Length: 68
Image (cartoon, rainbow, N blue to C red):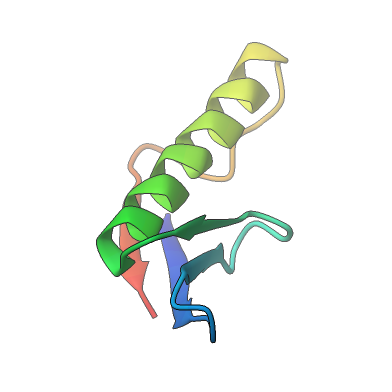
């Protein structure tokens, strides 16, 4: 599954990264790269928690990330 991460710079200079496929999953970073890395880490945490709780993850066998 491809996780689509939308990046946008706020008026205060921070970057916000929102994972479009996972409603409510967003993070802030001081740089675009930091925001992207934090978003990817959060996706992995969300999916790991699903697996630990016996829920079906959103991905099948592979994960990939794409900037929108």
